[in-house]
Image (cartoon, rainbow, N blue to C red; front, side):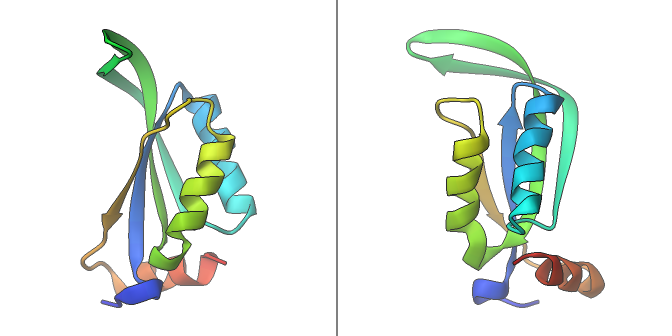
Length: 109
């Protein structure tokens, strides 16, 4: 396990569908800010927004990147994302397959 700036993290994101999700992921890949983004269609989100409860069908995205790139990932994803307030949650990766973690490090910036 490697910690600090080269530690691997995941970023959880939702989007209004697979097209929007893929647009964000491709932009992040093109900028070498993430190594991978898994787009999982078929999520249903229930949430409160501006005083009302909403129900939306969404895609969930799991991005793999490095701790040191998180500020840039959040900023760039926010500019590519169609939502006014996109869900972008960072989760630390405690451990993983060494070869996979090394691949993420190589592919990010």
